[in-house]
Amino acid sequence: MTRPKDLDPSSNPRALLGAELRHARERVGLSQEALGTPLFVSGSFIGQLEAGTRRMHLEYAQHFDSVLEMGGFFARNCGALAKSKYPDHFAEAAEAEAVATTIREYAPLLIPGMLQTQSYARAVFRAYQPTATEDVIDELVVARLERARLLDEPTTPLLWTVLDEAVLRRRIGGGKVMAEALHHVATLARRCRIIVQVLPFTAGAHMSLGGTLKLMEFPDAPPLAFVDGLGIGRLEDDPATVARHAWTYDLVGASALSPQESLALIESVAEDYAHEDHS
Image (cartoon, rainbow, N blue to C red; front, side, top):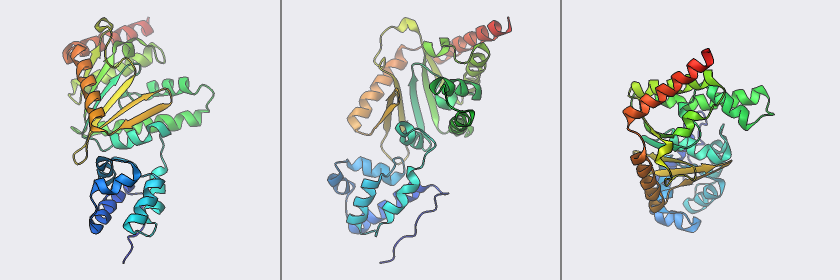
């Protein structure tokens, strides 16, 4: 049997590896569920690997090589997927985010990474790593700004963000940085590139008090949910769990200000910061 060639890491290795997995699985006549059962993963997880929305880890690759008689192809190539410019707990979510068609996110403390300006991102990373060298901070900022380039596309992904009012009030980097950052968010909203709402303090308790929530949808794979905390993150693919998180997001959005009211508040707070800094 002719073995497939190793993948070119400069291309999209996840998508190529996923396509090869689907081809090999169908060649031996296995369903996604049957391939995933020995690994204690669902058929939908295998589907996400095949669609390139999830990363293939070495233990899975070795199993696929054995079951599908691939001569070590998946184990050799999954190494290209292990290299990431993002922290381990967020790497898979960032990779999935890059191919999502719809992203919905509740942000309780910070402006979401895709919406951050350079100065805001630098202030955040400096706070996270107060003893890091400037080179380390520069690399982190560059990686974050590269994520924001997803919004250079005119319509995809659709990004719908609910910002807690604390995001507006927390002074990250000082008045000038905050004014620039909030004006940037407002500009994207006025261009109709994103939908943004603000959840005011007056809304009181809500279902997502525990932390950040991100929901992602894809054209050819089941949706995913990502929840994270201090240095930890979890990507969820169980349909019932994702549905519960989606319900949480819907309820948070229902308690938030309308997009028009939210935009007015964001711009008002931005002007306050700008005036304060000027004074």
